[in-house]
Length: 151
Image 1 (cartoon, rainbow, N blue to C red):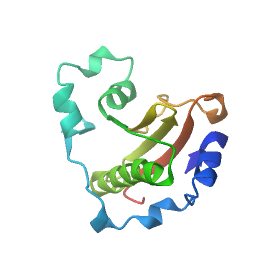
Image 2 (tube, helix red, strand yellow):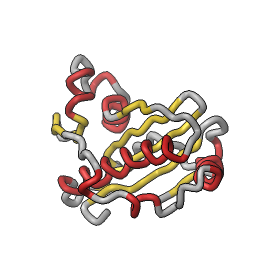
Image 3 (cartoon, rainbow, N blue to C red):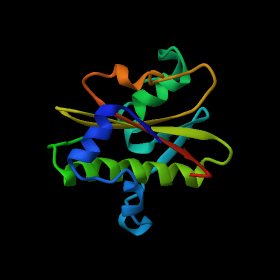
Image 4 (cartoon, rainbow, N blue to C red):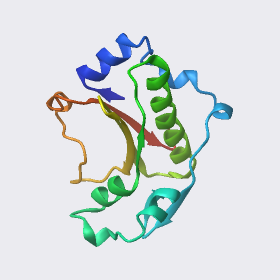
């Protein structure tokens, strides 16, 4: 798990422990439904909403997956609000782990004043959605959570 300073400060300020994933039992999470389209693992509901887009509309498969596989969640600055966002990220992580096989995925949590966005993509050589320099995100708290069968 990697995060920028803004996310570290947000976790501290809202008293959410860095080990937040331990707070969610599998029974307490609603695992999302997935579908596989042309080899991409996608959130089923989001793919149906964005069914008009194709992988060829994007420079790479990672861009396609991040466009489809993103969910906007409310964020009010409270601990409960942040835990709700992180709970969705954990549900994604655990859902992906069930079908990942040897594939590796990245769950990305981005929190800004106007809300929280959680997205994921398969990790591929030469394709990145998030900058290596997480501190470069001046307006967002960023958290990267790996997801794989070993997650």
